[in-house]
Image (cartoon, rainbow, N blue to C red; front, side, top):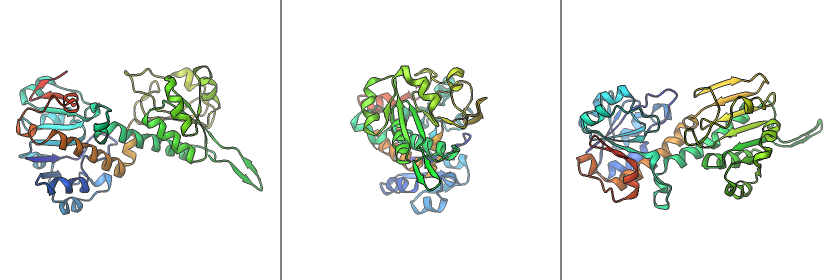
Length: 338
């Protein structure tokens, strides 16, 4: 069995699906890996590091795919990439941006495993790419917001006078939101948090945030120096920040959206409102930390691969009785699975 790893081609994507330490563990078990030249460069990993880990460096994507039965990727292959994949290939990746050509997939007998579908159960925690990447997105959102802000964040007492701490509101208390709260608190801000789920109050308050009830949300938005939106992405969740809510932002404030909760703009995009607030929409926030994000993603992916085993890449039917494997397999040998 040969595993291929390709350079990511999506705009603004700097991560790589396999890091040298993760590759070392696979090659030590006798697994052969072929990697496209420069695939890890944007994440800070040199080809030499991969070679030292036992990886064969291929001149281009076609050479890396030659003879491969399994493909590791961060993002699912694009339409053009899919056309160039060898017949019968098994692909393990994040398929949230995938636009499938099911006729092509069926004719070429591809098998697809979607890592974003890993169930959030205890035995699958070390495979959960959403948790690992969302953690980084929440952290980076807080850092980026502070960098863009036109004022200091912590309370300061100086001979010239005192500076009150900045107010940071986090909307959506999931994995990304909790990390944003924790990071903002460490930076010295007064942190507020909102979620429509009342059970999240305790989690937010345990990190030092003040929970905001729905009837006070607009008031808090208008007073905040920073707003970070980390609620679920549409269509799973509604768009929370439409023109009305954006219009509440005060001059000089910053809104960072990491999950598609702002109406209108694409991703990544930054614009300034009529009020003078700066809004940044970036659903690839983890990609701004490509070293750490790649290491965590690679660990998640390799843990899933160990569960899956090498059999599916050799054409053997996976153990669909296993809930993790069953949920992640969206297509087996060209046949779409629900």
